[in-house]
Length: 289
Image (cartoon, rainbow, N blue to C red):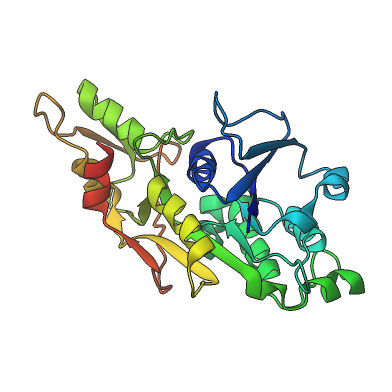
């Protein structure tokens, strides 16, 4: 059977890599939705279909053939209203219903310190609540909305990456580990917020991509998958990227401001929540060098 797989956010970073790997599956047609109608690659395989549309426009949901989709991979779900529209558009029950909806969330959904991620974190938490609830009640309370989604949460997988670091071949728009590499290789100090002892959890882009794809074929699918490392201090992480090609170890400048990239001086881990897919930071850094 030919599978139709819809990917939101398939034009850059991890989304583009997801699309590339899916395009190698001969039995899959990959639908990529974006506002520009542009393709993620210069030369697209025949089984990639580009649909010009804006997920924030209600007319998109009226025109897109959701009923033909077997899987939906959502790389850019940021607003509760986007989740509400998805819930109301996908066929969750009966013949021809969706097999799996995979949403990429974030460790930010678990953070109690709202200053760390602000509205981004609170929105992610609300979106998770909506998707995992048998009968969601917000942001709309219509009987049609709740009845349509009843038990739809059973077809949902939520991938929660920690801080995502880059990978060979996957271009990141987030200036994190590449900043470390550039400073270390050029012999410049890495500017660090605080004393560098705040502990964070990290993962690597290729691990998030493979975790997403695993959920398409896994016999026993999971509803929540936390992807990340055991806690590591920012200082320890930086030191793993050295020395440079001249064998000079990383130089670090410590500051008391809270505006420096790429990590604020705040702890960000999974805390008491289980790490479903544990990252080896040492192996990940070695692989991306």
